[in-house]
Every structure is written in C-alpha cells, then in structure tokens.
Image (tube, rainbow, N blue to C red; front, side):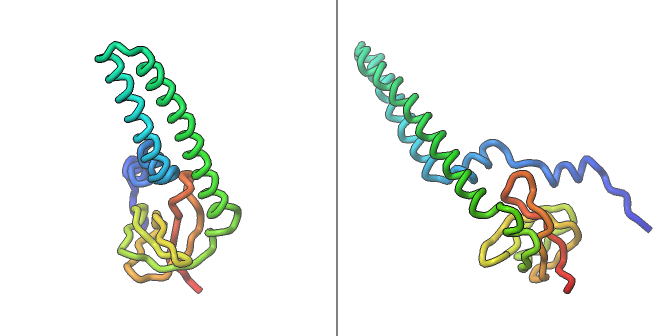
Length: 152
C-alpha cells in the first residue's frame, strides 16, 4: 500500500534558499563585510555633508557607495564562480558516498558528511544518523545534495 503525499508539504521542504541565504552562502562573509563597511563610510559622508552643508562630502559619499556596490557585486560573483567551479563540475559529488550527521526524514533537509565536508542534503527516503548515504543529484541552488541510503 502506498502512502498519499501532500504536494504542498513537498514544495515547502524543497523550497529554494532566500536571497539573503544565497547572498551570504555564495558570496562569503568577506564580500558582505566589505559592502557593509563601504556603504557605512559613504552614508556617513553623505549625512555629515548634509549637516555641515558640504557638497563635496555628499558627492564623495555617493561615489564611494557606488564604487562599493560595484566592487562588492564583483566580489560576490567571483566567489560564486569559484565555489561552483570547485564543487559542481559534472560528476564531482554525485555518486560519492558518506554518512548522515543526523536523522533525516524523507523530503526533509539534513546534513551529510561526504569527502570530509558537511553538505546540506534532502533525503529521498528516511535516513538514520550514521547511515551510509550516496549523493544522487545536486539541487538547483548548487549547495544542497539529494541523497538516499547507500546499498552496496
């Protein structure tokens, strides 16, 4: 006998990461901190220039913010490219085996250890902590694996 599955529940467990999640994950904390620091400096100059009536401060702050955003976006794109080239060329993770770090219910997210790295994973079936798993696919977010129990 099969069990009925709620499609809405399945969609909720396989939801793509939010923009903020992807920003921190793909860009790395360094790029985020650089953007925040440069934006803060530019904002300070604009605010200070407004109170002091100095147009040169306002112009400098605006230019700094624009340059900071361009540099930050370039850094984010570079880090994203480096991460995806390192891990997600065809066949680098799919088919590799590892161990479940915790109990993962079917279609739920959990963590697995594959090739000495902890990966976010969605289970194709119930997996107990310590079970051997095999990566069957990489989700579109490029950081979540689809895994099932390993059967030699």
